[in-house]
Length: 359
Image: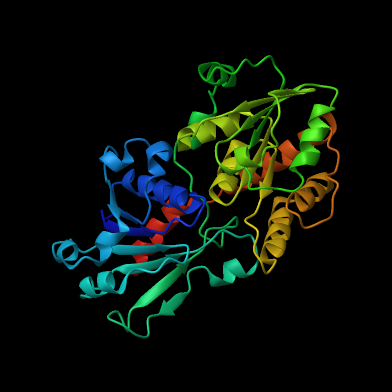
């Protein structure tokens, strides 16, 4: 396939998930011989998410400040890209569009949010004519990530499953000074679920020990203060993890709590039981989004009930979950979903093919 130059545009809203997706996409494109400029309004999280990114240590990817996309002097000497990717509703600055408004036009992609709702299949790949401005007469193309063959798929590195196979969780935990004695491991990456207190109480009073591995940020802030040992529950707080380290965390744990979109995809690839917290929307749109996902997942009744309370959609208390009774069914569900996804092309492969067809 022809090596192209890509411009990916990303605005960081509040939780770095958009940046995480864009960085993964940029790296995967570069890994397939493409050149990528990643324009970001706040790239500071890359210091821990992808150490070395801001110093140019990743071949094929250049991280650039969003502000430079409107500076005339910066734009004047800028080589024109073959493809533009507007990630998650951010809009390319008119000055940048005007500077690149030469024929032939780049393939302009509107990379949308992830959803299992049925309308995604209908919208994926549709054109959106540009009616005004310096690019009037051009076309943007909707590209929807998704879970079915008629969508754009999920990001997945070609060697991901091969790296997953030999993973040694005992060694990984020991490297982080976590004294694991065979207790069940649970990762916590969440917003501020009201049901968190119920879950902690359940695990504190459980008949078998568990260890909660709490990620830095909103999950750590949501955790009620208290000792590291709370009944049958031990709590370990983790530093910021790079993307590879977050994968290792998911691989290590017997149950993963994840939030947003990037971590949901990584939980699916991990193949372990997981609970997903959606970003809550004021109009309640996340309710339908959750139900669509649970239907695609073919989730068992216990997992559906837990998700609804965890996301604040159904009233509490949180359903009591027995790891011996419920987690095997949750794991089987996750692994069946992963198997379905592995039969489909990954997002980067599909995007490369789509852009090549539209050039």
